[in-house]
Length: 203
Image (cartoon, rainbow, N blue to C red):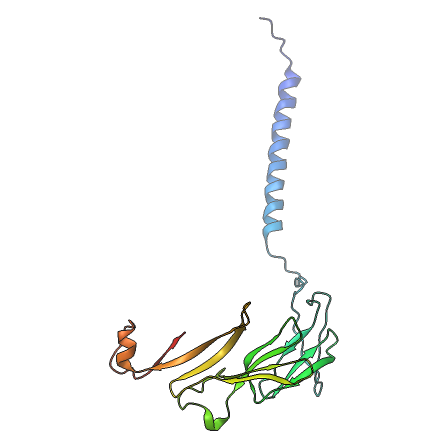
């Protein structure tokens, strides 16, 4: 086999190899520099939920962005007997007034009725069971605010709390705290010690 020897070919090949090594070195340095934290102050990423401070003395809606869920909002202030329905501009569309302050839950039903649970009067609340969110009374109103149904459900050792739920068959489901002494708690399977004198189970 005949192979022609060209002294310039070897030189060119060695120069290409050297240039490749230099390029690889510069590439590695570029990667290191780009991975290093910048000393310049970077702009923070956009916060999807910007912190908003209400102007002093302002009451009502303080923020309404394009990301807000479109529709109406139903809420019952903790210290009020009223339940409000507001629109996207914070304007009151409708309101109802119940017997007492709320027990966290209100539902606007499909027919326009309002289902609202509220607290019992102080004189009727079972001692030792009146915790945050406790209820004991459920009221149903029509759109005009007329009471259609008013029901109290509690005992000395049991008190509904936090939540009621309208069921498809028209019934109302609720949860309640149920007072148990240490012996009853142990019989229900809770490990503990003799210092436990009361507990709550949910039903």
